Image (cartoon, rainbow, N blue to C red; front, side, top):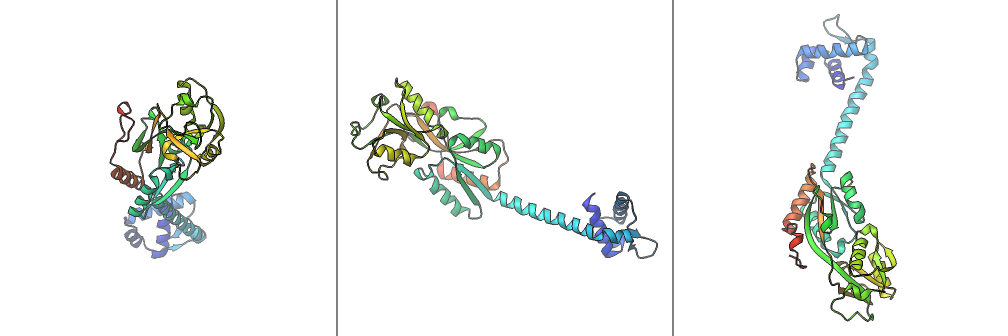
Length: 308
């Protein structure tokens, strides 16, 4: 049943005049008559008595009147609710991020964006790298903040580059190697390694670097909490290989952070899907971060190990 026909029915009940209903419904008198006849045919009953100069409802018309009012009102409420929901969605930005935002400059960017666009609700959630692209593909979020290596580049995503980071070694302060300016992985052969796990996207990189250095690391611990690993390193339970900017020597007494020779660089980026209709909130965020950053994705083949 077309709700529009019920709207003609309800208006005619009120006006009892085809011409007046046609004027109120912005149509012709003939179309009003057509809509009422179609509704009567669909319901297989006569709804109006037209035998007098002024039309009036039949008993069948009286019977369906409250139901027609309910149906039309429910549709209006549904449309209002949907419009409100869509407006909220357009002013909402969902960001999923690897759990190292405080160690980089993401929190400052988000605070600046909120100040610039107070009407946009930012929903932020942390997740490990392994699940982020899947969330983006499924539409669970609008944009992700993640760490990419050279081979992570995908044509279906576009990025805003924020900064580089490289691997460093974390040792107990009194470790025999703690006085060095740089450490090679070969010097760590035989040590107990404390490493971030597969979910973070870093374990495989460390394993590859160790194998390139000629040994298989002895892994004493794998996990996804940096603070736990740093505490274990401070307690002399092993050595850690972590991204340099995620480690603060001031926060954990008893550790020493030393840059790693022959390291692998990563890029910290915001990432969104290409070829997708983006919300106004996402476009505002993308333009804001692009303007603040004023950088482009660098050429991996021309990287010199320093930030540009």
